[in-house]
Each structure stands twice: as C-alpha cells, then as structure tokens.
Image (cartoon, rainbow over all chains, first blue to last red; front, side, top):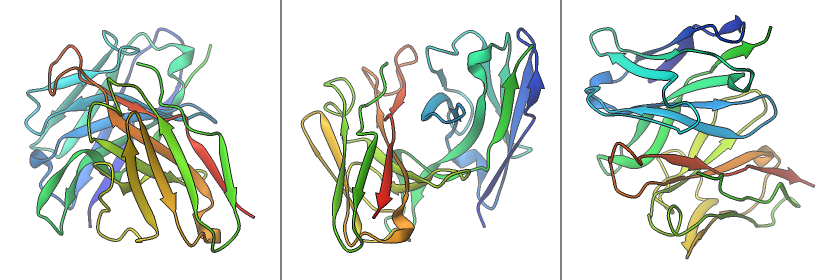
Length: 126
Length: 117
C-alpha cells in the first residue's frame, strides 16, 4: 500500500528553523516527483514546493523562496523541507504528496498528486 | 500568483447535481489543461478526484466529473450523497513555461464547502 508519513513539526519561535520529513513506502520513490502543500488553520491549500524524482529540479512558491529548501534522499525513500527564519504566517499543517500515476492508462498524471500524507503541524509563536 | 476563485459554499439535496466553479486567468486555468480537483473532509488529508481537467483516477466515483471553458474550470457532483459533504479545492499549473525554474508554480482555489441539505 502506498503510504506517506510526515514528521518534524512542532511549536517554534519566530526566526527559528525546522526540518520536516516525509517518509514514503509502497512505491518506487525515486520514480516520482513530490511536493509540499500547506494549510493554515481554517484556510485553504497553498502549494509550497516541488522536487523532481531524481532531485535535480526544485521549485518554490514566491512566499517561501529563499527561506525553504526542499530535498530528497532516494536511498532512504524520504523527502525533506528545511524551513528557516520561521514567521507566524508559516503556521500551518504541512502535507507531502506524490505525483499521481494512473494505473488504468499506465501514465503519470500531469500536475496532480494522488497520495497525501496525514500532515505535520507547524506552529510559529513567541 | 493569486488563488483561483471558488464559491465559498454550494448546497444541494440528495440526488441532485451541483457544480463548483473555479475561476482563473489566461496564465493558469485558461492556458493549461492541467486542472485538478481535491476533496477534503475536516481534519483529513486531501483526496484527488479529477486530474487534467476531466480525468478520473481509479476508484473515484463516476458521479464526479470535470470540465473547463476558457479561464473557468468546473467540478460537477451528480446524484449528491450525504458523504459528499466536504470541502473541495481546484488546482492549476500556473507558470509561463513547463519546468522553467523561475516561473514554475501551482495555484489552488479558495475552496468550496459543499453541504447536503
């Protein structure tokens, strides 16, 4: 069964750093692009960052560029999100998700994510 | 990149059909057939319902269908059921060119709460 588990969230003070992890199982991790999406309490979804299967391409939302770094270790089936200089507006549940694969057609889905983790909560407060 | 615009709430009676709109611009929804839709129950993770405007992943009910016209995408839920009561989000690829590092992005919709009367 395909499974994603996030960890590393917690209560931190403004200006501090955190590293979130996303552990994958049940699929060939290195073959899949991955993404981070966050959701502030009571708000909608916000795309944060994307990394290609081999890790050679990384992209960020403008709101986090320069403070967040996405990476992955395919030998450990794990993706990371390093978050620096945390701000109150970074308070959110952070989800990791994998690029979708359509088992009926045998093709990867273009720009859609079919499996999500349960999320890890980051709270930034003095 | 501004969020795509969705109605805050849509309601319907069991058995009816409802449609949720997702209004974007010519640089996201209007430019690419890369709109996806997600269902989210309170306290749960999002679930993919539709990808590439109108394709359904395996396991998703045929009651869910997607379409697009110009800069607006739509999700239709037919034969509304109590279990469809949830939040729904659209999402679109939103960059000037595929995999251009400076402009690659996704944008989500503002979200729609579906209530079954």
